[in-house]
Length: 226
Ligand code: ADP
Ligand code: ADP
Image (cartoon, rainbow, N blue to C red; front, top):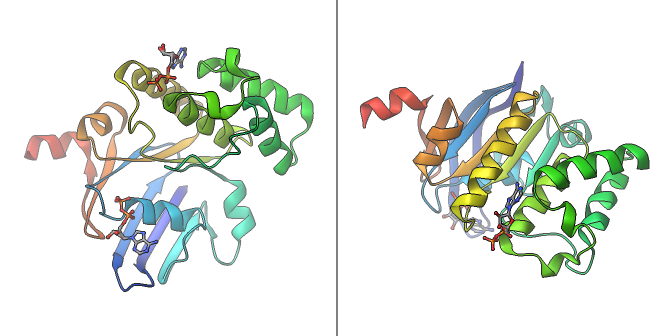
């Protein structure tokens, strides 16, 4: 099954910048897929369009076969998103943020509490569950967003540069956590500008530059070419 399918995807922003040009990409269910590229390449634009935060100019986007423009709710309910910007209420506690999200998806309280405990524990945040979120460090805020994105058990988790600005020790534990989530069956797509990170986590990657996919291959054969 295809978790994600993009075809002839184009984005021209209001100012006239063409951020994406005829992007074709397929990510199969179960993959841990890396989207690589330098700053400004178009990674966030792709992620924004998949999660309906950015409107595409033209092209097709399907999440598990659901076109995002015709079946937006089906597509959204299968998706978990960890954006680059911190976008939670900084005056709420860690628990409130997670449980509000669960409420938004109609998850019953018992299940929500069980899941919150598991994810916050595995992400090293359980002891901070009653802390107001603005008091967390950058790395903790990032992990809070990962826990929040998983609360409805999405089949596809998308992370936009999840390890940017996170120190190496925390980055490693984040990777271990994401590997575990992937091994349990969640498809993961993440963007990064570190080839080393993609090498450690993914089998398949796409490299995007100036709005175009310039490589779509498995990491090993790419490394052999370099
Ligand atoms: P990346 O995530 O790979 O750094 P982006 O998708 O953020 O790249 O940006 C791709 C291109 O689109 C860049 O040239 C960027 O300046 C431009 N861009 C991004 N967001 C906007 C916007 N809201 N309005 C106009 N141009 C934008
Ligand atoms: P930073 O100041 O770099 O943002 P963090 O807030 O991310 O640091 O990390 C704070 C502490 O939490 C660190 O000592 C780190 O080792 C620990 N930590 C990070 N991730 C986990 C995890 N998954 N499980 C347990 N402890 C963790």
